[in-house]
Image 1 (cartoon, rainbow, N blue to C red):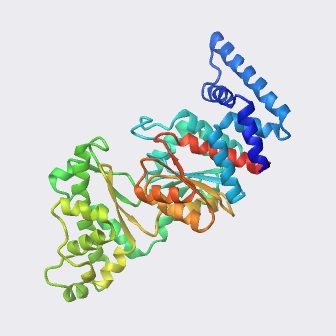
Image 2: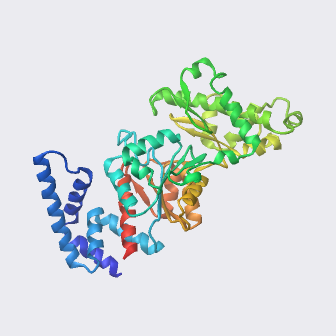
Image 3: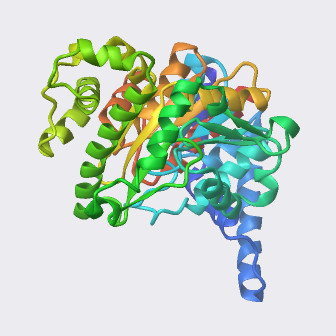
Length: 422
């Protein structure tokens, strides 16, 4: 209980809120070329040093406790203490989704807040590797991460990008291991399915759909995005239609790629088609997809039990993902964020991982469950994450944060690591 008593004393006897405000000001607003601004910045710096010195002189681990006061609120510090009591270790890597996790269209104007970016640089300077884990393309992610964190950090050798939800891993500064194309390791039959879908998805789309969507520039996954503002009614309508179209394309492509599929079709009910098989299988696998198919008058007539085994075996390796008013996507279940994260941690030489996983979607949930099942980390999510993600986070460590406020959880993890060093 000694640490709890010391932290209680820290926040009872010292104005930690003012210390934190000064620290945040100095972190986010560096000196600028203005005499007045420089004087104001220097005054703030001097006052921060004085307040930290009081804490340094009052505690045996004064440097660490001054850092705790400057980085976290009382509640955040006690949460970090609880986590350390539970796990007895700090985090040795960050695994972070981007959209609606680090940034939010509804709160941060789709930009990662400056305070969040600065905290990431603090982790980097403390030697904690950062893994950005996203469904976006490599070039897009690399571009805005360099813009936000700087070229030096991104190419430092302790920064990795798991892109397209796990199809590839990019870790600059690691020679032949810098870029790992995990999709190259898939069986030829699976790659054939994706090649066929990619070649047909836009050229054969109905005119109204083709004019309303575009194909995201992925290396492997096939992702339809709306030509409307994400989240709008127009985007919702076109992505729902696009989902039906993708599912049907997948059914035909799997039928063409599956060995002995023609024989399987002969044994199946006469009114069933590969498109019906796909609708039946994926509606049965995902209630959200079933709801969309039903709303689009595309509910399957086929019983999922009647899907031929040779076709089902390929369906079981391929994922259909639906993001309301955002995207419809086909990906490999063998290539997911979990596999990408494990590959990234291997390149980064994190041999005994205990990571902070932050995300909002079902693809992030897989990483969270892996961390939980292997005692390899803790999970956090924004309040608007999918219900399954929120259920998992609340059932583990309750690290749910307000939309756009990823910094609050990063502060907790930072203090957790400070405490672990004591």
